[in-house]
Length: 99
Image 1 (cartoon, rainbow, N blue to C red):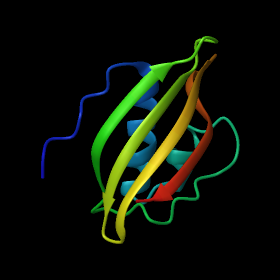
Image 2 (cartoon, rainbow, N blue to C red):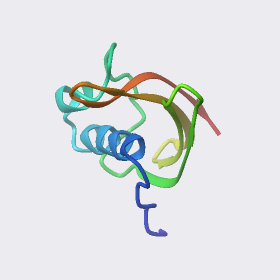
Image 3 (cartoon, rainbow, N blue to C red):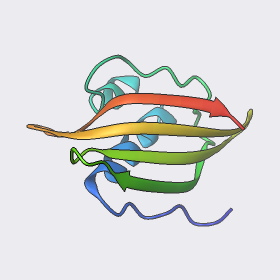
Image 4 (cartoon, one colour):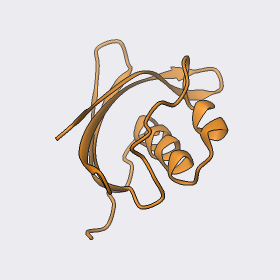
C-alpha cells in the first residue's frame, strides 16, 4: 500500500482527522469536525486507507477536498466542502459514491 498523502492545508488536515476518527471507531470525535449533521460513512473501518487526497480553493475561501478511500467493501470517492470557523476548519457538506 502506498504512503498516504500528506495534507497540504488546514482543510485537508480536517478531513484526514475526520476519517482517522472514524477509522478509530470514534464517531463522537469525528462529529466534532462537522459543522452540522453526523458521521454516516458506515463503509469506513479500521482497515480503510486513504489512496489519494486533492483539494481546491473556492472563490469564497472554502475548500473542496476529494478523497479516494480503499475499504474492505471496495473503493469510494468522498468529497468534502470545508470552511474556516472560529474553532478551526469545519466540514459543512460531504458526499460519497462507490467506485
